[in-house]
Image (cartoon, rainbow, N blue to C red; front, side, top):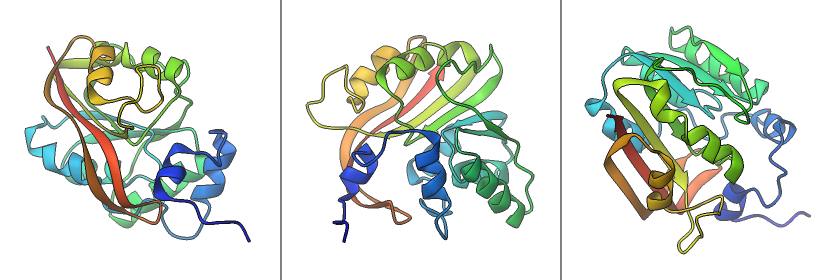
Length: 209
């Protein structure tokens, strides 16, 4: 029998090579791996956001994009798992929403120029090289006053080169933004069977200058 893994091990992907096939298999499981309710940090900052076009990176099964659509945003869900995106479309349809989706790998992904009023990335944890290249383009892809909302796993004491650095490191990679929230802390996640328990995370809310 395969031993059970802790929540931290599941989130760091010690049993994963981070290829789409791994995530296709996870999202093909019964139900929704991370639940159908939106991330509570995103919910908490939504009143500070201007409604408009939203790019939802690493969106998975669509819980956050669907939430935003219900509040008047025009989201596009991006993920490299087609299985996840199919479930995102189904979840949105259950709630009377048509959700545009795009299968894309973050490596080399082009978010455009001055195209979005909001970019979200909830528990997307790309490798260092991919993360830095993407974050270098976040400010440029936002319209003036546009927002970036991030929550991600972090590890206390991790180096800047880690896949799970602290909020200060992430802020340094996100040039051209003004940070309203940039914090690390332990919290209790209740987001489906894979995010269920205590976890240290970094949370960021930032706006285009």
